[in-house]
Image 1 (cartoon, rainbow, N blue to C red):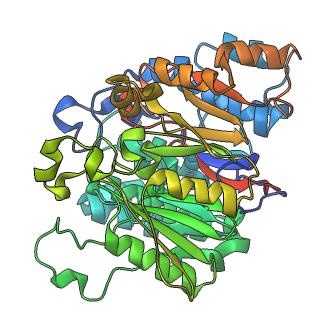
Image 2 (image 1 turned 180 degrees about the horizontal axis):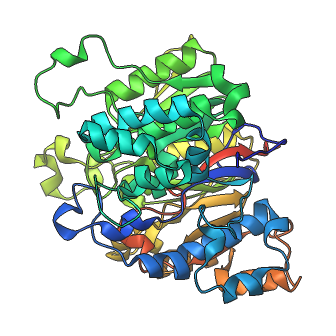
Length: 480
């Protein structure tokens, strides 16, 4: 059945406005098929235990999202959901699936569009071309039930668990396939082959699902540069790539784009031209961070918590000390080895503006773009204590999702960062305790303020992404 939401809109003007709808993808069987020899090729650092990830970790994420975004789907039903050992409420092909029109499952949208015979045939041919399938298999897939075919395209397996092509385990990180920028959708170009099928599925969904029909003219696709096919090599630095973890909508007319291991200068350049030509935003700031797996995207280095508060990795955030204050060895250091972001802001009709460090940029966003009348505050990964700053950044201490201003989700394993939040005046509560308080009417999601919600993370953190990565906001309230 086609997902319908009569209140559906695309409108994202900040990172912290109250979240009203988003796209997610719950862990599918493909995650349980990642093998050690292919883990890094498929962009995983480790293999995960799927049942634990589903039932003891991601399960809480879905329930929490429903309480905040679509409470009628869960209020009064928590005990029944918890007693369901199979956790069918978050599996999109089961009868007890929550089917929320606000916490929207990508697999459901894919199954919807595959109901159309012409779309099913075209998309199947495209997937089979990418995956080098033979003609008979292609015909078999075209004749497969749409709900089952959606599972196959994502998991890479037939119903009998026979693998016919690789899974796409990174689809759980829905942020990377597209970003809502005001009332436009910017579809992304992934850097790694492991994510090509995700991008193909996303394009078909956004251009063909009736949910997005009113916004079809607002869907932006980043083009390749002219004659890109003549460039030498496949992994050259000029490849046009852009992923959603490197894009942040920080105010109604200001977008951040990170240049990182996954997003190229060429990709950022094409995105800026596209956004300016379509009058989507007036200002774009490029934040160029070191091309290291440690950082991957800018949202692994910083995310916003409140209008005047950010969480970030301090070692990448501050300006270099004046030369006279450094030790003698600094006089001989190669400046090219310094791990400092380069930050340039572009505004239509204006000269580019340089920022000396991330803290200067984020302060400018808070105080000028968002009109904060308070001094900008920074909460540092690992409480800025070595070696916990780097350790906890690796497990996504800086990759937080704001459900509303001041209410954010983070992993429970980042103890020192939790201490930093407490020192900054935030309440800290574990998600299982919070859900019970919501169910018992002891707390109300709508009135909750200044809270870090701790999410279980033993398996999720192995995948190298936090809740900012695991969300594609489609609608947020405008902050005033």
